[in-house]
Image (cartoon, rainbow, N blue to C red; front, side, top):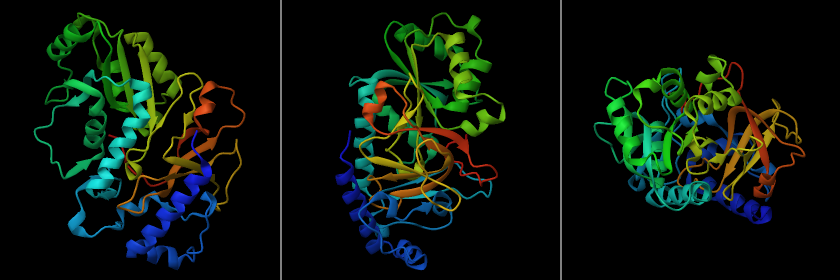
Length: 337
């Protein structure tokens, strides 16, 4: 478990850094009269997630921009845009590796991706979907795309993949709604010659679509396990605004845990901090965003910090639940694809 005092000092210094290096961020903080923040996470200013699709928020000069990340779009057609320099991109990769290696192991697994193969990849600009595939590809090898160009399951490709790798652990990656659509609703098991018994499904995002068809997290797992007999299903929660600092769901108690790079607060509509067990807006703090002021974000997601949950995962850090998007909120579109 991380040292909270050390984290608070680092997030405080990071806030000062962005205040000094981002004129837009400085203007926001000054206009809101929030520049007298202290060395505690409760006083650190936060930005609403939607600001990243309205303003160009960066703390580096244009010439240092190494890569841009974009959300998949919003109801207004404006995606969030995140600006990374080379150092920040490397930090995100290292953090993701540190978070996921204890779960997936240090050896790369054959990887089945629930998507069609892209014609080309722009190394300078990624949308949320490509960013996730590329990020998690560090844990895979022998990359295979399940879908053809018509976004249909390619059973020849699937059978060839399973023929080669079904007797060892293999990784299946996709956004939640895509995993459910293709591996539960559309897949025809009579066309498959091999089984999924050694498959580890890694999924995240896309819960807005799941809520629309009234499929809960529990039902999602039950249906996939029953139909395909997967070895494990791993759910993660994260924002493109804080790429790299993701949260993994405990397979025993279904809570998410904070990691060494992050902290969480829950606020009400008046932005007061709520106690454990009370539902409100999720505020996420991360040490990773150094090239843009995304280190403290108020999301449009409803959650709660879990109170007195007796599970071994508690030793990993603070436990929390995500209950979904704030009703009638603007769609952020991070990974609802």
